[in-house]
Amino acid sequence: MLERIKSIEEKYHELMTALENVGEDYHRAAELSKEKSELDEIYEKSRQYQELTKQIEESHRIINSDDTELRELAELDLLSLEPQLSQIEVELRGLLVPTDPRDKRNVIMEIRAGAGGDEAALFAAELFRLYCKYAEKRRWKVEVLNQNEIGIGGIKEISFMIKGDGAYSRLKFESGVHRVQRVPSTESSGRIHTSTITVAVLAEVEEFDIDINANDLRIDVYISAGAGGQNVQKNSTAVRITHLPSGIVVSCQDERSQLQNKLRAMSILRAKLYEIEEEKRQSEYDSDRRSQVGSGDRSEKIRTYNYPQNRVTDHRINVSSYNLPSVMEGDIDIFVDELRMRNEADRLSTIGEDDD
Image 1 (spheres, rainbow, N blue to C red):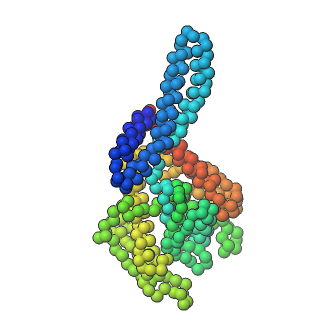
Image 2: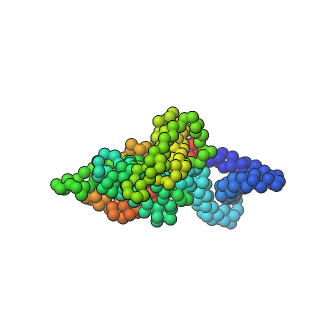
Image 3: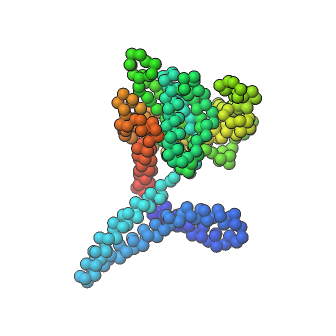
């Protein structure tokens, strides 16, 4: 940890010198100021840490002196200084944990009905409502990008964006398989069915974050599906983009124009390709480490909604809520907060291991 602190201090001083000599290049000054502000807290804590360390070393030296009165004062100082040092060290370790640069970004979420037929599609619609409620509580905005509904109010698949500061940091752990156990309304015998729904969570990606070769794309346009009647879309505004190297296919039809649908589809494609690259980088960086909260892989069963028992259980952290109706109204922070805390604890432990 001390080596990392030293490196950050050197970088901080370099930024200070650069700011002093930046002249009238206001754009560069803004960049340097932003970079420096991101290090301000760590730098301040490191100064406090080093000052406390010096005071403690001095107190230990005094304890070995012959002056009884000074020894007693030094012992009293240590009773105060050592807990302060421990607290500063904890805070510093927290600040040194590498953060996910995507945490503050908007998210693109995809919900797909899996095993269970119509019952899975119905629960997919309920999960979409759950996330809309959660976004509403946090004053985030929800925009539907593409959806495929069934006639009884269910959803086979839906893509939507949630816009809000920190949306990805709180929703990224929702990625995986959600399982529901309940008696379908169409089941006359009262037999419990098990259905599965897949949720994918992607951070919104800027164009400069990932380069996509236009020659790698096949773009098809078609008439948007509608419910019929006077307002049915007659023009070919829906867009389907196929990324040929990866085979990823993205469709968007909920916007009014072909251009808007294309821009939305490209946004989803960028997020998916970026996620693939990020997973590769993470795998190369740490191939043998798995987070305590699970890998977030889409094939991993993460949560079960058990209606007969009025229970929702997150299997990654073994935490349950016995108020299923509240959870379905968007009250999922019981899981989100614990997942975030466990994830941070795991990342903190990597610092300790590296220090060893």
